[in-house]
Image (tube, rainbow, N blue to C red; front, side):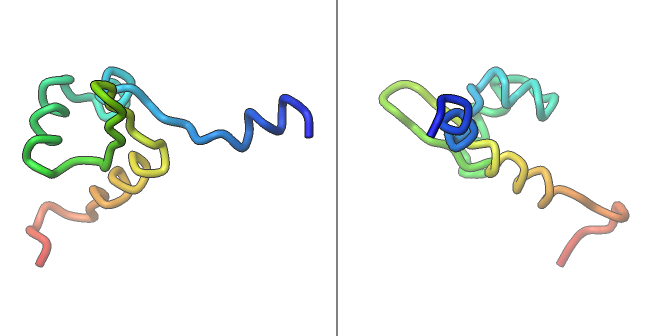
Length: 72
């Protein structure tokens, strides 16, 4: 296995700033979501918070709507 394939197999985790930027929200909103238990799932390593890319993509997908009516 070479270095390139090793990099491709590594999980991609975004920082709070990167995640907030991707979702186009303020980092404080993201922090509030963590406290409230909503928003994308995250990893807590000591004081560091990381967001796995697949979890962010799943959160984005769950937010897709075809109209503005409330979902059941």
